[in-house]
Amino acid sequence: MSGDKKIIHFLSASDRINYGDLLFPILFKSVLERKYPQAVFLNYAVVKSDFSAFGALPTASYLSFQSQVKLLGGNIVVGGGEVFFTEWRTLYSFISPTFSKLLKNTYFKRLNTKIDFAKIVLSHNKVAVPFCPSKEELQNNKLNLFFSSVGGVFFGSKDRLKNVKLINTLQKSSLLSVRDQRSFDSMKLFGLDAELVPDSAIIMSDIFTQDFLYSRTHLKTLKDKKYLFLQLGRYKSPSDLKAFVKQLKSIGEQLGLEIVLCPIGLAPGHEDDVVLNKIYKLEASFTLIKPQNIYDIMFAISNASLYVGTSLHGLITAQSFGKPYVGLNKNLPKLDSYIKTWTHKDMGCIDFDSIEAIIPIYEKWNFEVMGQQLSHQKQMVYDNLELMMQND
Picture 1: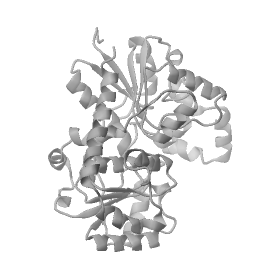
Picture 2: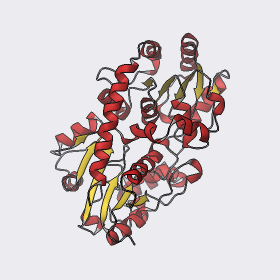
Picture 3: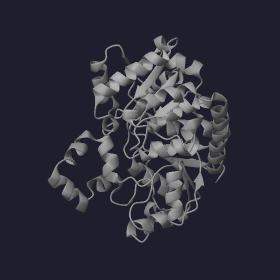
Picture 4: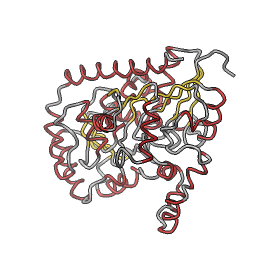
């Protein structure tokens, strides 16, 4: 099929409408086409999908990934995200509403711990951990395995059988790069040498200019507005919505910013729209937008005066376009760790009952320092991507 061409098998969780996950293959493919236009790029996820109407790249299934890798060999790039050690049942629950409902049934959940139905259906029971496949599991030793700024931590002790196998797989990888200090420390604790590299999505502003986004968005009326962009995950939101909305409205008034509500994750387990709809019903002066594609989301954030939310990739979008950002909910380790790793070790997320801290963060935002950090971090990502692309 490809002769002597470079083959890239790109594997990520981009088979669900979750903004950040959809970005990884798009950005990698864009850089690959500029650097190595003759390369063969094959895009996979857990299931076959086509969200091209939402701006995403279609994915082939994991079973197709297994057969193509076995046949063709080449380079496997595991795209970013908090997918490192995610299990089959968790991934499938984000894709299949039916499976997600079944897992809420006590009997089925107990049965599924003995018989991993998702693993059987999605990989024919051949790969233990979806995004950490070994060469042995894939039945081809002529492979280069790369982990591109991924997130995740080990569970259990170092001598746990599952962890022993994972350590062996990661030791044999051609490149192991992780996106935050929390993930890096976990690798180090388990005797692995990893590179600490920012999330690859940080380069998006180099790929998608604001003029391009404006030409693609359905939200052109936002162009001349000054607003605070708010996103909240359904299961990551405040317990007292009324108090939160009251405080948020006050903050908007003090900063002279409108409040724009926008969902980023619509897949099961994320469902930003659920809590944002509740907030809109409590305060009609807020603006609720319903994005029709990734360009709507990216434009709405890149055009905002301030991003506030629980989504890591919402925050990274603001960072990429040089906008101030605030992470909400201190109980979100991946978001809190990422901010502390790449912004400032004393920053992190803020609690819902302390959101008045948004005001001094916004007013004291140092655009020059943040701009210098951004430039350096983008270069780190490009250098990391180059290491994966240049390998044959």
